Image 1 (cartoon, rainbow, N blue to C red):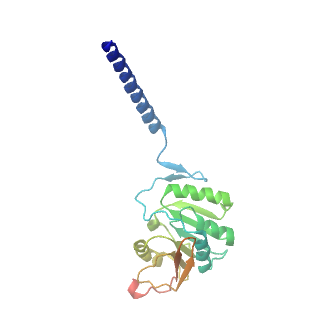
Image 2: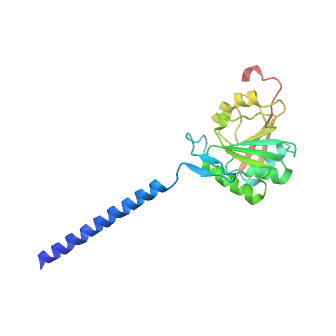
Image 3: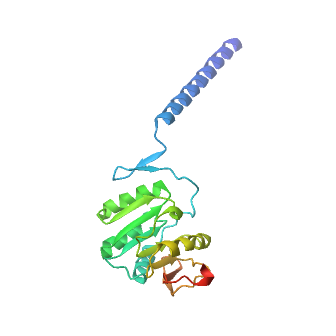
Length: 214
């Protein structure tokens, strides 16, 4: 009787091991078949996976703060707005909805680009906005008349020479929560959000870059 139990247990164990191996092979086959390197955007262009780690974590700007950023920059229909680290696209999309502004969102994360494109379709502003999966440090910003950003202090400072080099004098810049080191803002505004107070920094690109910032 004990010998019979032994054989039954052995047969059951072998069946479980075989089933486990089969599931693993099925999983491996699915993984090989599933596309993992690109995401299709609405305009049928391929979006590649991030080429490096993200510069900043994704933290959406509250809508109340978005509205104040656009107001502080005095955004108009004639402007071209570039949002660096555009996330779900809310700043560019809000500008298009409220002011008819043409805008470009830059983000290195393909998930955020896909989300922003979906939000633009839902808001019916795809004729005014576009989202590019790019490294912001390798992006041509020369078309912009307004630049918005919600990055980090060290990223802002690292980005500063690129802003001076590429942006035309008179271009307005608004940063959420973080300044640009020695480059003193033209205005600082406090905005009450849903859970805390936010600080907005505003600059206008000068005709001549101050010596201490070169």
